[in-house]
Image 1 (cartoon, one colour):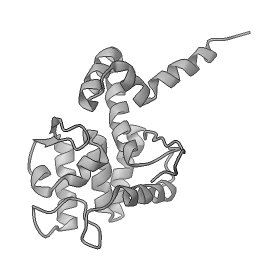
Image 2 (spheres, rainbow, N blue to C red; image 1 turned 180 degrees about the horizontal axis):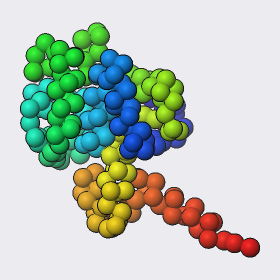
Image 3 (cartoon, rainbow, N blue to C red; image 1 turned 60 degrees about the vertical axis):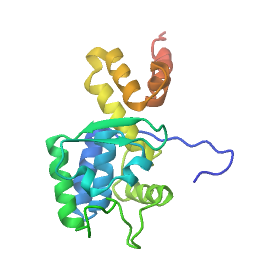
Image 4 (cartoon, one colour; image 1 turned 90 degrees about the horizontal axis):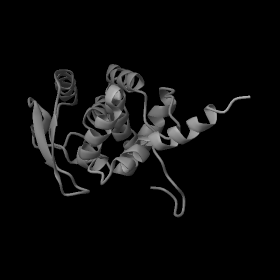
Length: 195
């Protein structure tokens, strides 16, 4: 939770660093956090929607639909083959009691809180020496957005329209600001100045 009157922000991870983090967390036996980072980066879900997921929704499926908690809108997501394999690997190591269980259960047997996840992510940032200034749950959603944008840079406007739809933003301008593109464009103005 942030302090009253303080501003909070989340930065994105470079895609290669995010994928390396997923692998390192799994290699070190931290399958829950590996799964969290993977689902966040591959779906762009908000943390509230990730924490609500149950194994029966994501295991052995190629796509599934959720109703977003924040907006109340339905969203369908496709799970690619690599993510399916990672979900299975995590499932086999986590060994949940039931397919009805939430995917992210703490040692106390309760669903993780957003605050606890943010604390864990800050610890992960330090432990794995991540190149990110502000790392939080929202960083995963921004990592997804940045990767979609970067992969479609030859048609940036179409990428922004797709992301606007996925993120349920009301305009492309909001999506640009959300991804930090607007600030980058403004700062590039200074690079044009020469002696």
